[in-house]
Amino acid sequence: VAQVPAANAEPKFPITVSHAPKMTGSTKRQIALLLLILGGSFGDNLRGLSVSDWWEKAGFYQIYPRSFKDSDGDGVGDLKGITEKLEYIKSLGMKAFWLSPIYKSPMADFGYDISSFVEIQPEYGTMTDFENMVGKAKELGLKVILDFVPNHSSDEHEWFVKSENREVGYEDFYVWHDGIVGSDGQRSPPNNWNEAFRG
Image 1: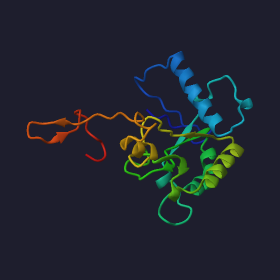
Image 2 (image 1 turned 180 degrees about the vertical axis):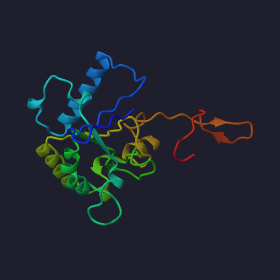
Image 3 (image 1 turned 120 degrees about the horizontal axis):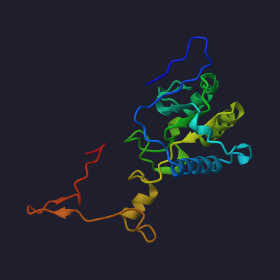
Image 4 (image 1 turned 60 degrees about the vertical axis):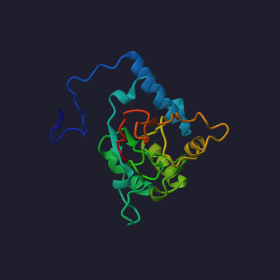
């Protein structure tokens, strides 16, 4: 249930979720640790962090870069476009924004199929564009949360290709299992899992 503030109220957008499980201390610590790791990964100055759980009361703005703001007229949103709108996001009363994957990807599932964890998707911009966005966010007091996907990659990722080819040192980067051979001699996947995006 969304609570809409009065017209003259300070811009805050609290959301109440019915039947949501209460977070345990362990869950809070895990989320706080994740935020610290992500913050530290990008060189943020951690001295200003308080012990309080700022994220429990903060407003977050979620951005899917591809459809957010196109700065160069190519029809695709980009990091420069996001940077241009940070003051607007701040004016909404947001304390942070959550950025869907911006990593290099063949885009078979909206960027969650990452082919390089260290490169920016070219149509979104460059690492310099990313650094400029983070710098502007920091200047405005906005925290940046990246949607990082460590548990899978694209089949175009270098590690996947090397593992699939059983290159030394990469054999166990992914779980491999021979398919099941049916009575008709046809091979099928070794499980009954359905693939959400291609099959």
